[in-house]
Image (tube, rainbow, N blue to C red; front, top):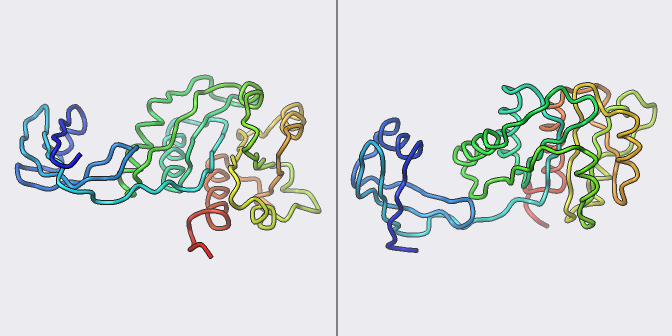
Length: 236
């Protein structure tokens, strides 16, 4: 790809030319979410397009641990925030699911992807999380991959006298493909809890003695996963 020219149009061109005021001869770093990033020279700038020539590889693309985030969608502003922060925290897939107590009937997945791309750019992440389609929890579980364990963040455990040892549970699945499942603000229904617990590989985890908001729970769970199973530490 070295020596190839890349044409940037639309919002990206506007951002480079108008917001960042990049000019001919300036160097920029480019990535596409699938390959390494490249250093490129800008060779043409206009209001509608920017053309850059690839010079050399800037950084090698390294995938984060294989963790998905499944959640019942919430209000738009907090939904944008969740997509951004889940990207920053290394989620490989971000998927909204429709649950019995979900208060949202429609999700703009293209907006979620735009937020994920922006977060990846800001944090230097070279891959972009897959955005799953908005579908019912039942449909999602029916097509669940056999090699991926479900980490069921069960708010019903917050008031339980005996809670599972969450850190021990996470240590036991280190290296496995996993998915965090977060419910809506009203929690999961009993029917849903029964259905989730029937899945072949599912671990109930508690996020402490307090019932957290959905967006807080998602970020807390992702942080804990990365600290125990993820890339927040050096491999031994």
